[in-house]
Image 1 (cartoon, one colour):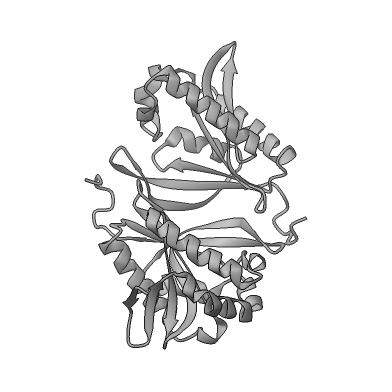
Image 2 (image 1 turned 45 degrees about the horizontal axis):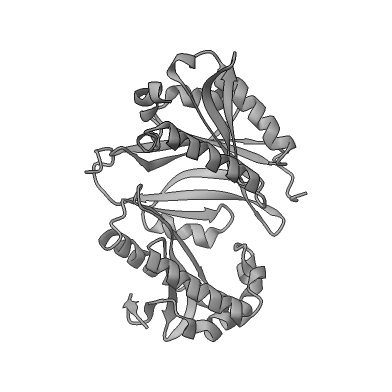
Length: 184
Length: 158
């Protein structure tokens, strides 16, 4: 399928139903690991749920509301990331990401987020990118901090994750200079 | 609303979409519809029989039990404590009818009158979202305030 090369090992692929089995296997194998920080694991019970996700994301990409890509590492699906909620009027989008446990600690997400920032800048003409992480999710928080995002706030008890209350850090990266000049 | 067009346009994005009474009628019906769905509740503030503004709970989230409070008043009705009293009532509605555990208010950084409401009511400042909205070509930063309605140390959801 259509993909973008990040480096020799990493590619970002548009979602497509043919990735169903491999994505479901990755998700299923990492279920407990991912459940620590993601709310939707219980909704993915079989390959059909992954297929539905892949199709739905491609549909929404076509509508221009988001961009979801699969992270391929040395030819295998390692995780999912993308821009959620691409806001047209405020030209702001939020980046979300996850990796299977076995792919953590190799700088994959940092390299991919750096690439997504370029895509956001060049193709989506964004003026701002947001990353939200649970305050206790140290690995996830390290990514925006490493890439020069600024901490804009801490939302207390913002999410209920499997019965536990989560505080969320909001990080923002402004992509345009003269940040308080008119937009045009 | 029409009389306060210039005043409201300072901080609200939808003023130019409201050109006629029909637009207002459509808005009222849509908001009432959304209230039925449970996602929000929009109320008209009436004093001595006259409409003075609107206020409500938006983005009511059943799992997180959070909602955002939004409001506006006609210029001639500001400075009388009307909104603080209204928001105090909305907090009670959020607590008792929607079982919310947290309420959020977002104000333009330079919207001093609007910010005074959460500050007066004991909301805590959680952050400043830079360039969060494009308002008629001008970039606006938002101040985020929140009020926790349950003891902060309770880790269980119920």
